[in-house]
Amino acid sequence: MVLTGAEILIKCLQEEKVEYVFGYPGGAVLFLYDELFKQEQIRHVLVRHEQAAVHAADAYSRSTEQVGVALVTSGPGATNAVTGIATAFCDSIPMVIISGQVPTGAIGQDAFQEVDTVGITRPCVKHNFLVKDVRDLASTIKKAFYLARTGRPGPVLVDIPKDVSNTKCAFEYPKTIEMRSYNPVVKGHQGQIKKALQLLLEAKRPMIYTGGGVVLGNAAEQLTKLTRMLGFPITNTLMGLGGYPASDRQYLGMPGMHGTYEANMSMQYSDVLIAIGARFDDRVIGDPSHFASEPRKIIHIDIDPSSISKRVKVDVPIVGNIADVLDEMIKLLEANPARPDPEALGVWWKQVEEWRRRDCMKYRNSDEIIKPQYVIQKLWEVTDGDAFITSDVGQHQMWAAQYYRFDKPRRWLNSGGLGTMGVGLPYAMGAQLAHPGSPVACVTGEASIQMNIQELSTCRQFRLPIKICNLNNRYLGMVRQWQEMFHGGRYSESYMDSLPDFAKLAESYGHVGLRVDKPGDVEGALREAFKRKNDLVFLDFQVDQTENVYPMVQGGKGLTEMILSAEDL
Image (tube, rainbow, N blue to C red; front, side):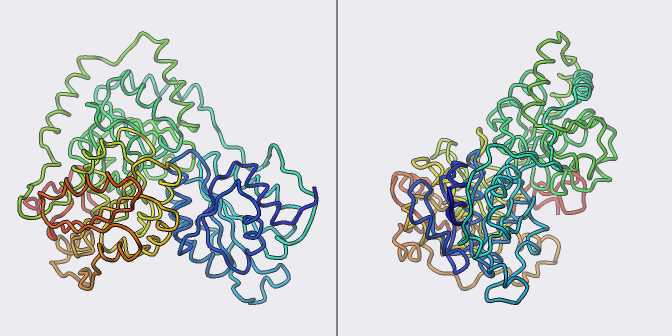
């Protein structure tokens, strides 16, 4: 077949079984949009801002096992997409972003809507390509999808000049691809796995610490089986929530800055710690020198060798696909009659339960004013813990992570690494399109929601019945909390004193808007919202302005230096 570059791109996407492309048209991609129009296999979702296109594609990927795809034009289209690309990069989300570019002869000539997209995105992609010859387009798309989904996943950008999309050549999509410089390790080293298992069996105070790699590596089933076989306590990071069921007794809650007392104490005082698909980042272990002050042996399983011993020295590194490594561990354990010392494990669990009895997640509820934690608890009850929950970034994000108990992977979608405000609504769009008929709720705040609120228009066009739970405290909540605690109560630019009527705003877009002022109305409002199967419902909860997120580890402090309540300040 002899096809244009635009036709080749669409054929390639069809070969990759792409179902949705999230995008926004412009001059440099009109040939591509023309070919999208001529076919029906791929559905295009028109967003109202390119940042939302990338976020929605990101969420489509997070909530499935697919590679998300976004399409933007050159210049401002590409620069608007950068925040979404960086968000996906920080959380290792497999995506392919197609950007238009000015014609090849105009590159470097300051042409209209020209930017160096490859140069701008280089620090925040797994890889990127500028396709200057239409004959390279098919193989480049094949490489892009291969790179995005293998090894440590991530976003890959393909920049296509306008003339390339309109030039013809013979087309054949490669069945396989080989890249001499890229050969990710999949199987873990057998000797290292045996060494790790021996350490685990000898442990007196073991702890399992898991992150987003378990979810992205589709290893939740293996993790659950191994954890129950060993009988060890386990914690999931913000990105790993749902990797192990939160309702299970062995689960200690989230670790780190806003983690539970029992999870942090168990992390700090364990004698053998196995890290699985996690990276010991600053929000999890706090000060590395404080974390290293307690002697312990550390096992680290990760697909990315550069993540191992990056912040914390590791004793037994295992590079490989997490599901495969855990499968091998389970096989070895099943073939080995040895088990952890039950007496030592019993003593350890007694200590863990003592820490758990501190009940660090308790809060003082009110009959007069809505507490944000109460809203999340009721959201969990009303949805039976089975919804797809997206969040923006701030206090509401932490409350959602703390009080919505995730028992399944890929149900919790949030920006963990970059901490991007504005992701919540486009994330909900991507999740709802990926899972039509499933309940999807966006937990947000009055500041975050306004960063991409124009996507209410997209939701109307595509009839997306998302439920938006706005925890409206009339502040940049997390900023206000830090200003209260560490800046003498000087609330510099953190007060939102010109807010819209969100219920009426939602109605102006053709949706349902509800304002909720009283605690007694919270559950009823949520049940009414989820009864409306075909409607987007915007629930504007007027919550306590003074409520803070606890527990908390101040930046630069150690895991055991926790602030459990206002009395600890």
